[in-house]
Image (cartoon, rainbow, N blue to C red; front, side, top):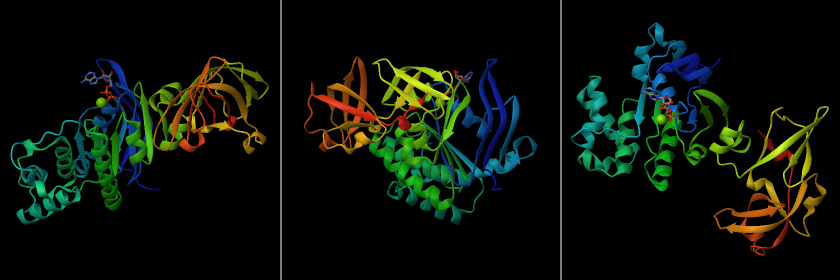
Length: 356
Ligand SMILES: Nc1ncnc2c1ncn2[C@@H]1O[C@H](COP(=O)(O)OP(=O)(O)O)[C@@H](O)[C@H]1O
Ligand SMILES: [Mg+2]
């Protein structure tokens, strides 16, 4: 059995006598890059504070690096983990002073401090900033220096509470690319809170989605994105199509009825209380005469193009079919002949439908 870095079992946190965190089971393996997602107030920060031992929990078990924190595991956890917040509090003084701080606290010898600070700065491409005043850095620079400081003592676990949320997309992508490389190189385990699902796709191997303090989905980013476990997750990932539906059962088989009159059979995993169909826009195809797709077991529907939004990679096409609006994502060259008002026939496979 592989050793876990973080493990929570039956952990409950009450704040103002409200149950704020309720984790039945959550284990993170060495080197995993885990995103923690969820709406505001879902309990993401609470979870990270518990893991960082900043917040006591009223029930359950927390083991870090294989040791129960209630039984002397705190010391190793303090030495081996590091946390960074949205507001990186850089102290007065140079960038060098800031990054050297954790090593000074730990009484590292002078020569080693010099070497590790410069290595950490190089890692995050900010060695040229070493003798600048930390308070005068730009937002992106400050967060790079913050990362260098968080990792200068080579912790094995890094906890990030939305530290890059205020940066522009390009800076965020660049910093996460560097961090991903550093993590792979050092077998660093990372828990990254983010409400930006694109960061998650880019960075993480795994996404833990929280709502009301509970884990409501824990899976690969692609699965969370395309197969949300509930309506809350579908909303969080900004699912293209969340179509209200009715489910009729005939034995084991479910018939799904959409409001436009469309009905199709669904054999796999239909929750008894399902009320909506989730369908990613790229799972809907625009049919044309030469389309061989007609021969597949597809659900087809005729509609009218209600709008086209350009995009890189895929255009978004709104199709209206009997009052139902579908969002379709298709490559530009496939939709060159279409304009608003064009008649189209679109199709999807029931296999791509996730019922919630
Ligand atoms: N210091 C606190 N005291 C009492 N309740 C808090 C405190 N911080 C957060 N909460 C409550 O705990 C819940 C979870 O908050 P939080 O973990 O910060 O959510 P998130 O980071 O997902 O936005 C919210 O209902 C919030 O109001
Ligand atoms: Mg938070």
